[in-house]
Length: 293
Image (cartoon, rainbow, N blue to C red; front, side, top):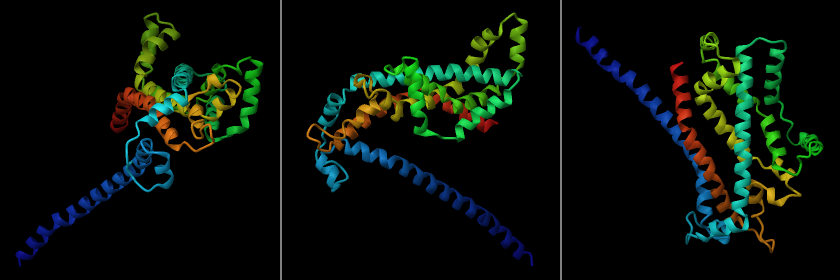
C-alpha cells in the first residue's frame, strides 16, 4: 500500500520538468528564427556587394565566384562618397543635437511645471505620432523654406527633421519621470536657477535616455531619402548619401549597376554601426532599468 504513493511522487518532478524544457526549446527556436530573418537580408546584401552584376542578376550562386573588392572602389568614386558622406553626417549630427536639446527642454517643462494648455500640447504631440501625412506636407514645407531662403541649403532639411520630434519627446519624458523632483528643490535652495538646474543636474542624469533618443534620431536622419531629394534637386553637391546611392542604380549607358549599389549600401551602414556601438551602453542601462522596475 505504501509503494504506490512513492511511485506517484517519483513521477511528479518529471511531469513538471518536461513543460519547462519544451517551453525553453520553443523560446530558443523563436529567437533563432527571428535572428535569421533579420540577418538574412543583410547577409544577402553583403555577399552581393562582392559579386559581379551578372551573378546578382542570374542568382545562380549564394557566395561570389570571385570576390570583387573593386566594387567598393567604384562605388566610392561614382557616388562621390566623400562629399555625400559629409553632407549626411552634417544633416544627421545637426538634427540629432537640435532634436535632443529641444525635446529634452520640452520634456523638462512638461514634467516639472503646470501651465495652461499642458494637456493640449501633449495631446498634439501624441497626435503627430499617429497621423502620418507623408509626402502631402512636402509642398508646404518647401514653400516655407523658400520664404525663409533656406530651400537651397541643408539647413532647411535639418529644421524640418528637428520639428518631427514627437516620439523623442515622449522617450525623454518617460526618462524624466524617473528623476526625483526633490533634486530641483535642493538646487533651488542652493540658489541655482531653473536653466542651471536643467543643464547641470537634469541633463547629466538623463544620459541613458539621451543616448537611446540620439541613436533613433541619428538613424532616422541618416536614412531619410525623400526630403533631401526634394531639397537638393537643383543642388547636386548638397545631396546626402541616400540620394547619391540611388544614382548608382544605373550607369552612364543606362545599364543596371546593382553590385555597385549594394557595395555603396554596405558602406553607408558603417556610421550607423558606429552610432550603435557608442549608444550601446545607454541601451543596456535602459534595459536594466526596465527589468528592475
